[in-house]
Image (cartoon, rainbow, N blue to C red):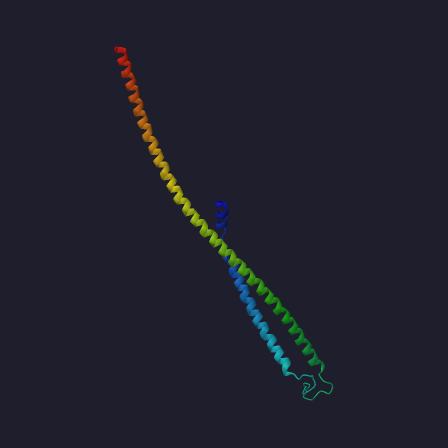
Length: 175
């Protein structure tokens, strides 16, 4: 159990990943904003043109067109439509990428929270273990001191017993 918590604590979250993702997000937001502005501009240009394409359209020389739009204006409109489609695609793609990056940020923040919690728990456990170790070392020193005292007492009592036996033997011998 302690090894698992210690393994969790040894992981260090890379700070550069978070910073790089923030830069990518910022870049994508800016690109998205510019694409949205470009789409708005192209829409406003399309809205300014007449609805049926023949009213008020004039060729570059200043005369009005008899058959509707000339080929140059048709090419311009096709290009504008193609650009608008490309920009819409890029916008959708960048929005998807932003969503993915936001999800990554949320996931990574969750990991950071878990690692911080694991680290705090491991530090608490470490402190508790240090206190327990100190207590056990005190008890061990006390027990060793008591053993020394008992050994000295035992030696003293053994010597007294030997003296008493010797005195008894001497008394028995005198009788």
